[in-house]
Length: 372
Figure 1: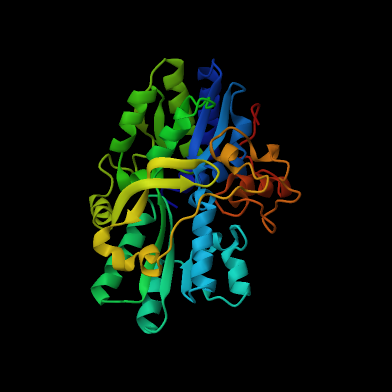
Figure 2: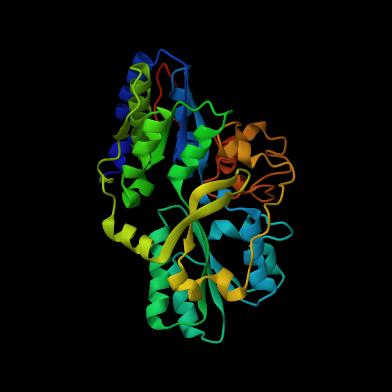
């Protein structure tokens, strides 16, 4: 398949790995921001192919993982206390709240439904005018335009029974927060290609200039990731810090102007709580006052509570690259995908879930040879 099979080509992987081993002389710690990139690195055994001095750590780029406990609690309250029908993407259902997950709320008789698109929730609201319908809008800049369009569509239909519970977060402030932490040892970043498909590249240049770290926008296939790592290491070895676009076949510098326009129409930037990390300034999207009738917090009079403490979960350390999932005392014992203690074990993009999957299944190395 064009733009897919060639980016899994073992011969290209071999060449990139050989070049990395030739280039890498220093000790470098790089972070891939996106959970999808983490899963590709782990599933394909790419970290085992890297030079000894190149270390990959995993970032906060899993939107389900960083959704704070109080927002899960609000979604559960909408179901159990307000009798709302809550639609959500499937990953969110098993993420633990303070007392219940959405899956447990559903088991208790609440109306919780899995959606593949926010428009399904709009259509349900249109067909069921006596029910209050809420879409739990979780995601980074990648999902935000679709969620914004669903709200615009509901507004145009004149629906009075549809609203969003917004948990939209932004990647660049998260990178800046990681770098601002005195404990951070990150020297370069692989930025998420799908986010930049929407937002373009402009937001990353100030981070490169401020912190003097390379940022390379990268795709998700093995060749994409290894090429992005090589580009980052080449910069570090030369003492450079630049913004580069490895994913140029998809990402344009200006991003998607139409998608950015609808985001500006529906959402405003605000401070946001991140699970296990705390408040990251200007890192979230809230529904604008012009659309307040479609904001579930406003409609139901909900207020955020302070972040609850996860019972022994080290999600914050995992999400900021300061610990690997296997360093958590709960990993693979009390915390598994069926009995998660924290969100990174639940999501299909969570680092803990990726490591747990590999612990149960052999790693599929995409190439052999002397580095395999």
